[in-house]
Amino acid sequence: MVRKPANLTFEQAASVPIAAITALQGLRDKGQVRPGQKVLINGASGGVGTFAVQIARSFGAVVTGVCSTRNVDMVRALGADRVIDYTKEDFTRGGQRYDVILDNVGNHSLSECRRVLNPAGKYVQIGGGGLNDGRWFGPLPRVIRTLALSPFVSQDMGMMLAELNKQDLTILSDLMQAGEVTPVIDRHYTLSEVAEAIRYLEEGHARGKVVITVEDSNGPSPGSADPAASSVSAIGADLVAVALIAIVIGVSIVPILVAFVLNRRFQRRNAGKRPYRWGYCFGIQSLIGGACLGGMLEAGVNAAIVCGVIYATLAWFFAQRRHWAWITLTILSFNPVAWVINVFYLRKRWAEDSVATPIDVAGPIEYC
Image (cartoon, rainbow, N blue to C red):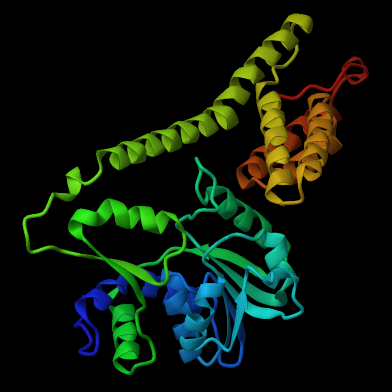
């Protein structure tokens, strides 16, 4: 907690902590913005975006803001050197390249954003979700795609969540006291109008921040403002919980159960041979992971199918005890735990193969 700048109202001060700190840390820590760099703010008229435009400008960056037609003049007044009206122009198809992209919206694919990012540029995704996120998983799929893509490209692809601290609040207070940053307030609501305020925010067209003013009068309590809205929120939380449980069951428990069934079938047909539960489980999980990888690359359904076929083929040869398939699938699992486990299994099995009898060699190679 820091002292409120004298030139700010209480409503303006209340709008600062999350949005302004997110903008500051996204640009300074994740984006590492330096004077003269070209910075694009996607969603420049929103809560984080209005702060980001002003903070990037205070860092000496050349700022481009992306917003709708009605907000062009406002974003330009905040200090943006260039404003793109997304209803008339797609910034991912322009010729300009940027050193940093601060993405508050997530309405373009990662591959589209990379197209206008310099080879050593930084893409910063603001976590928290929005209208363009999935119904059940919110921003999680995009976060996973960002983390999965980052190791394979020259650009720095990442996301961030704000961390509240006194030092950054002090920095923002100084910027506001100096007049370099000014909070933008779109609308004021009373405490009894919380439900209406949330509905307005969910439309996705708020300019800057929406502020709730505590009433002095005895108005209705916020808990009774809109029971239906609370019910919908509870249902949404239940759906997210069910979806997360389904992911755990589908990715971990189902492959284990299928592996036990396949292993039991194998042992019935090949009495006395070494069990293969780990191999079946790893092969199935790799097949699921391969299909998911195709989807994460945002190259469409064809990429998911191709990746699925490749991983299915490798899993088949893996089940046939082919050493090359074991090595390839292990590497392409992108799983350090699997790398360690399989290294020990490979060394053990290859050592057994080297001392196998002629009869053993004639038969199929077995792995556990």
